[in-house]
Structure formats: C-alpha cells, structure tokens
Image 1 (tube, helix red, strand yellow):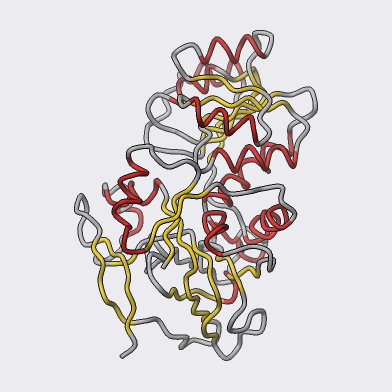
Image 2 (image 1 turned 60 degrees about the vertical axis):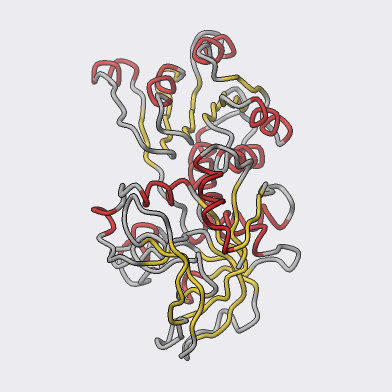
Length: 344
C-alpha cells in the first residue's frame, strides 16, 4: 500500500499529530492527485483546533488539515484534459460540482455540493492531496508552489474582498485596511493594483505597518487606541468610503464601524467576535456590512495573473512539514511576517 506523511487533527483542543496514511489515488474520471509543494498555515487552522468549525464542517476525526495548497500534478483521472502529470498548479480551495446554479454562474464558492479539503475533508498538510480538474489552476513557470501556496486561500480571500471594494472606489475615496498580516499584506497589493483610491492601513505592529507602506499603502496608522481619531482626521472627519477588516476579533469591529463614513461599506474578512451595532446606527448612516468568504475560480485566475506580473508578492516564512507545530505556535504567537508555509 502506498502511504504518505500527513498532519492530522486527532481531537479539538489537542495538538496536531503526524501520521502515516494511505496516499490518495485518482479513481474518479475528474480526480487530480497533486504532490504538495507548499501548504499555507492559516489562522483558520487555529480556529479549527479550537473547535470553532466542528459544527459547521461536521468532519470526522482524525483528518488532515491544510486548505492553501500548491504543487505538481501527480496523477489524473480518465476525463481530465486541462492538466497533465508534472504541471505546476495552485488549487482553488473547494472541490465543486460544476452543475448547480451557483457553479453555472461562476460563483463556485457557493456550490451546493462542494467539499473543502482541510475543512471538511483531507487537506494539504501532507505529501499528496486529492482534488478535481475543476479546482486546479496552472501557474506561470516563474512561480514556485511554496512561494504562492497561500494565495490559494489567504490571497484569494483578500483578492475577493479587495476586488469587491475596488468596484465601488474612486480616486477621491479612502479605503481603510485593518490588519496588515498574512491576508492584509496581500489585500493591500491587490487594492494598489485595482484602484486609485487612497489606502490607509491600521495595525498594532509597527513592522507590519512598515511592510504595508513599502508595498503600496498611502498611510500607516498604529493601533494604539487613537486609531479611530487618526482615520477620521485623515478623512476630514467623515470616515472612509470602504473598510476591509482582516482581523475581525479583539475589538476590531467596533472600531472599524466607527471609521466608516455615511453609506460606507464594511467588508468583514477576519472573524472571531460578534459585530454589535445598534440598528438605528445602521439605518441612520445607511452603512453596509458585507461578508467575504473565499474567491471564485475566476478570482484565483485573476490573482495568479497579478502574481505572474509581479504586482502581488507573498511574504513567506517556510517550515519543513515535520515542523508543523513550530509553524502553528509561531502563528499563534504573532511571530509570522506574511504567511507560514509548510514544505513537504
């Protein structure tokens, strides 16, 4: 039996464990088996270990996590014609049916029959991963799987929110970004590529702000308690037309709502706390609160086009697959600049 190493969730509030498990095979016509070249370590992985996804995902333990994956095609099913063994690919995080109403309209994120490797089925903290022909995006030869893996989900989520915001932003507008970490530093670059609006970044870490301004942010605001006042000052007292919140916990949402101007859009990306806004404040200012999950397959193609031309660069810290615990601990302790990547 062909086996491989995989890092598994064995219990909630327990440490992850390395295991030897059967290596996946392409048995269905649309199956694609990918040899993992890089798997991103995400805050959602911490939330999974805390049990936050247990009810939503209904996943059976033990299972392999990791939902930001890139690598090389290893084996394909009989009907697959868009990739062949050896091709360098990044994986759209969902395995989708292609037949439901959402898939037919290009909104595959809301597929009625989807599976989500790393969330509700085996993911990429492993040597190989099973996905489908619909989920693989060939990447430019100049790009390396370990360098772009986190664009599969962190990048795609950031792109999805930033592209939504960019549709409504004009040169006179301000877009505030809360959090210049793993997602934020990608969102800032996407905004820079897609909109002429002014980009104001709020973060509690001076290093993260330095990175933000070096990759295109117009202003960096230190989250030291005075950030709401600073943002209002920068916007003539009105607040920002759009705000993308990549944090979504630790009080970020109440501050974020106060940074918004009338009829402003609040894009929620990071999560962890409840949003508590009096309904009278929502109607009197006519603000919009917009949820953002991951982007579509087309969003990922667009993002990879930006990556291939150098408009979006992922800042990464790489770890061997066996050092998964160190990567998780570093992320939890806020020691990762950009994204942590496991390299099998």
